Length: 239
Image (cartoon, rainbow, N blue to C red; front, side, top):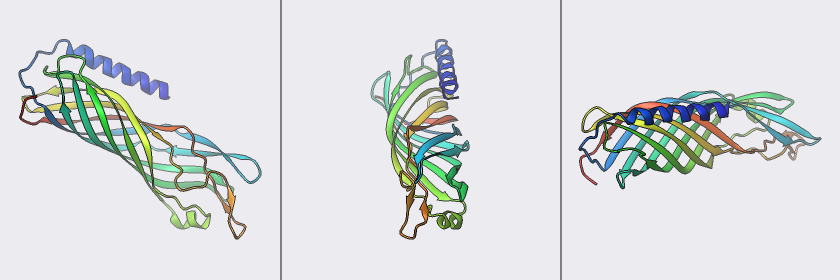
């Protein structure tokens, strides 16, 4: 599934590059741009081997696809290179499976807030009407979480916590300028972040009352593929 997503992202970006070869150059040389896109973010289901008091269990984590948006400010430092500061949000209803025998499933809300700094590369003429671009960047992701049934979670000694993790992203897109200031923007992006621990211990434990505290051992990374469309506004000025 992940390889198919990456293949799709490459194909879409390549299509944008081919279209740009027929674009006519423009005279506008705007240094600063503000962009806003809305779209959809998807993710794969994962499983995590976690030690128990008597062996090993497999904890499943299912993340639903959900709505997303991005807001970015781009500074063009040259004809082919820009730097973009971005805030990205996505909403994923999620479910833990097999945390403990008494808790086979636990649903929770998961809202991802990402802040990143990226390099934007224009392989062709940045001053053309249709401007394909590639992006790569890094920053931090905040996993804002809350249990859908907090009483049930606490009864089973599960206290979910929000967490910060490292993240990076890569992808591309195209800006299609309608006039000197306004453009349509299309993005394909893969956000990769470390798996948070959600405030859970890394293995099952027994509390002071002899009750089980379910564990979860985070491993690997999460990948969220984002498809978005929106607008770019070019601020007056020249580099």
